Amino acid sequence: MAKKPPITPSRADTAEEQVTRPAKPERFHGATLAGADFDDVDLRGARLHNVALGGADFDDVDLRGARLHNVALTDAEIDDADLRGARLHNATLAGASLDDIALAGARVDNADAASTRWSDVDLRSARFEQSDLRDVAIVGCAIEGLTIDGVRIDRLLDEARGRQSASPSPEAKKEALPGKSTRTTRTTRTTKKKPRRPAAGK
Image (cartoon, rainbow, N blue to C red; front, side, top):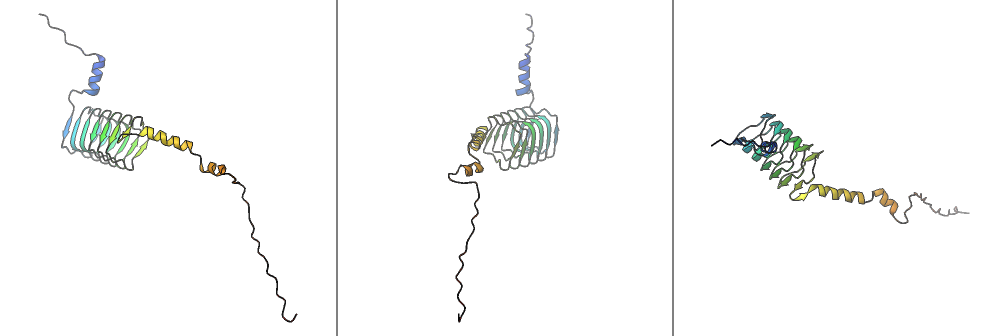
């Protein structure tokens, strides 16, 4: 009986395998990698559990579909990283700088992101739940579909902008007041002179 030829996956299947199902995802458990330098690293589907990455530098790192649980990224520099579809749970990002990051479709739960700066970050359809976002600076980011604790942020901003454009300016309010003249009238105070008393003996 003749052997059947091996099944060759199509290009589409190969691309999908590369994006969502890497052959051997890296696993880091209980590691201390503070200050580590990750440059041009493929960490698709990686599993990081109880990992200390404070002050680490991520540059051109592929973390699509990665799972980060109890990970400390305090003061880390994350630049040109792909975290699409990633899951971050109980992660510490306080003081971190995130620039040119893809977080579309990512889910962030119970994270400390206070005082972080997000610049040119793709946050479309990302979900944040029960996270500390105090003093976060978001600059030039795509936020379509971004939800924080179930609230669509893009819709919230649209409503706020609509209210601002509908409300008249303070100057317009002054001009619209009935009977109010814009001309300033100056009132002069007149004092009534007292009659002089005649001198004694006259």
